[in-house]
Image (tube, rainbow, N blue to C red):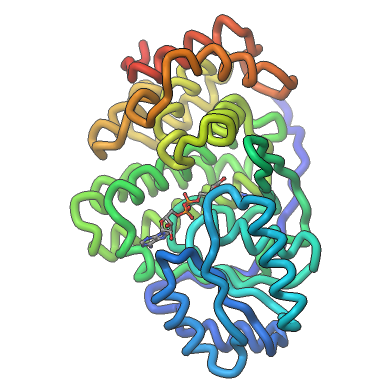
Length: 354
Ligand code: NAD
């Protein structure tokens, strides 16, 4: 078979390593920023205080209201805040929720962002934004919202609780998995995706056992970076669509939903994407991709049922209806019966068949 692909590189400067947070003031200067706003969730306020102190006069304040799925009212408040305080750049410290707030601000203002990720969600490497209005989550792509600089410092991830580490890591693995069978998959992204799965599958059990293991934290964050890169560069499929529906409509927690659904979405696509399945299995050191992912989750002790996340049996029909609503690419055709069966398996946490 001859090769045939389009590869679009995305702009970003990445600084990776233990203790690299110290580079932040220099990186802010490199972008010529003089009035930055530090964004965080209320929970990570102490971290944001430390970062604002490092920035000295370059930081004009902290906005500590970031929350999951970026409610539109929050985005509007934050946008008004940056205008009122003549902010010329953003610094984020946190997970996908905090990065997402910076993206919502950048979408209307074009302000540059320096992102300091503290989970494995990978949003910092993507041009994807999301905003929520009531039950409806809207997403889109816009190159101007990609953080200009990303500082990955594994020491900032040691405070991540074991379960968030495990589920956030599975979220990153999910990006890599779907990149391998994406409609616009390409050889570079597939290399990164397989390496991302390998790095995360190797390190996450160590991270869950000992959150202070800096070597494992470093490898997991490296895997998360790869996951973010591939998520930003190629399209996703059934798994991400389902998680979007379940998270947005039923308000289920993002990383946990990704964790529970992933082995079942992979089992659904197994016959239709054999090359991707072999890459996933190889990266996991297992014979079967779906079973390998399921067993990894059992080892990590994550939730494995939608029931455990608070989903109710009557929601499954509605979720299946929503998941087939707008057509989208998937290696195996989407059928209502197939999706309903997948949701049933995920609801009860059945081990996928080989
Ligand atoms: P999160 O950002 O919501 O963080 C969860 C909680 O953990 C927060 O309270 C946060 O403050 C805390 N936390 C984060 N890092 C911590 C650390 N190191 N130590 C202790 N506590 C820490 O969770 P998430 O899973 O990173 O992000 C989920 C959100 O990101 C969702 O809204 C999802 O849709 C979005 N997302 C977007 C993209 C994209 O490309 N646009 C990609 C992935 C996720």
